[in-house]
Length: 198
Image: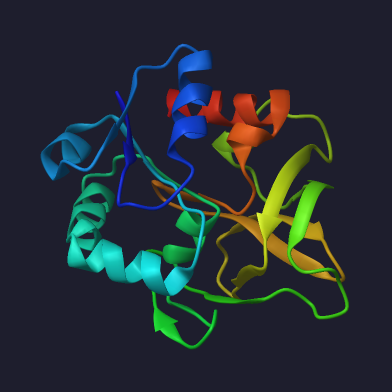
């Protein structure tokens, strides 16, 4: 069972439909017991970092997520869900994240149109089980104004948007994607299939 965490924010329906399309059992839930028992967990997110992290902490999902990480259950953060996994964000202030991986969330280069909306190709940096079987430089769909900045060896893919920016990361059983696999056609479905097989 794949659990999609419902913390009152995010692109829940399309994530659920994508997993159903590839034949996976999936549920949207805000029940910590169900989330902890799940085989795979998705942290989605569309919106503002400040509100999202506040809501997660108020509902104690931060504790649930740390238990999932400790149990070695595969965990995938998508878009804002990715950004929440890192140490802090500078979106409209400075806010602490979940610190599941080291790094900061900063604004896209001012030389470019913000947000980045649309398709861009990935430059895969390290071998990742999520990217198995993909073509070289696969195209995926983005909607974001902030991105990951880190010196830690966790970045699994980048794209070019004014400069090279990190758009995917992984550490042990924790995976993070800035783009939307559920909106990225066959490439995105393949990534979700790979995650489901972990």
